[in-house]
Image 1: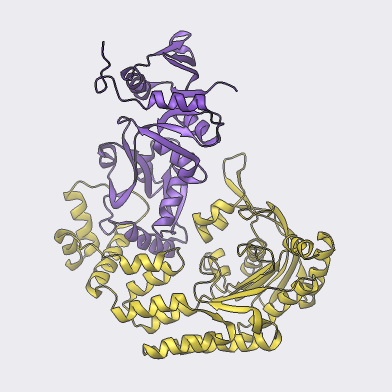
Image 2: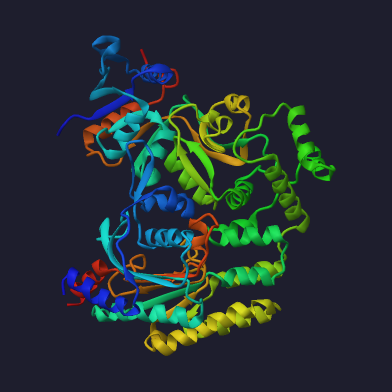
Length: 373
Length: 236
């Protein structure tokens, strides 16, 4: 089958979910992906300037423009669950061999449906079926759950600042290690004294004028005071205990068959008395069971990794990639996941709705089939 | 085989100091067409010599249109897509020294390290629904360094000049800029982070990795790598 025929096959499978076929805007303000995902995505983004000098980007996937449309729909007062399907072009600067800058994604995005193990499994099964319908037998499936690491952090009962820092660090390359190794520098006494003043903001303003330091940048005095408080709290809390370090480093290393994931994580939680992580682990188990029931083949191919998907910036729960023979790990033939916070982020907090989506890459499947022929 | 191409800076202190260095190893530079000429001859070296801006030299070394050149390491690092593998510094020349640094407002008493900056960035994003702005002309260096330090909570703003004024004028909150003494930063109410020195740069004789290389080129490198005459006195 040629590329376009694979697109048609995949599309027919995806459209069994119902929903509205869409082909949204090709061009987005570059602010949307960059604010959402940070500068790390810029290296892959096709950016140009319009005649006023404003930075624009070709859509790097369909999730963003579709979610933008859904956010606008909800901001206009409509609600209810909604599914969108597409077979549409996306643009990313290629990093893997043979990938093209412009390629077609076939997929779907679902908003406002109940977030459940069944919903996750249903979406995964649909995408898996689309891959199989294209004549490609997955050689591997990698799954993650971006709620697991934060659940362990919460269960450790760390001070708020440290917990927040670790949760953010988890999403950065080398971040957790950096946090574990970093030591906070104590504040100089005169600065620390600002916090014990009756009005810390006024005290900070006085200190600044005394030292002839101008205000610059977009952070207010209040924000600087909050930053000082957080830093003091972190220093007072001291470093992480040895036990906490051990559990976080062990958690990062978890990489096992999907069916064993919940057991492995439970054992780790039990060994360190982290009963509060049980809710998230139970959710993971329910999802894994539902997936293995719907897609029995995944028992052989699917693995769970704690760190997987942590850099897929807007995903916040279940994440997966489907791999195929002959392609590199960085070239999945399908991918998807849950992004319940995306609409909130896109609308600046005006609307919120659950979200989950997945796509297949016919351009890569053509290559898998050619190599297998 | 076409001739070897060497580039030297076309203006300013960097030009003078490069010419002084070449003269000190016995290779006087003579500009063709007077002060406004854009080619030159280097005594004792059989090569095509171009006078270019420091960033043109860095770009030419990276893409292979020049064999050898004298330029700042800051530009080489920033303009090379794949990092230091795109060029080879043969000799650091001891002039044109400056640091590429991360600087924040002095008023930010809560931010002394890159880790503090990450925390401030996260809080800022939560409060303002946008990321902290980092103004710089060093887009690649900044992106690499912030990733290396696990700082993701920022947006780059490309700055063409007077980067140090960006926080005061409100176009950015943080800057990445080059500084020799730090006086300009201080005058603008900024401070360098404890771990904010990204690169210690100086003018360097640099070899292109992509340019076609030959025995002829190696011989020229050997001439240029000689020590100044004062240190290697030849018998009269």
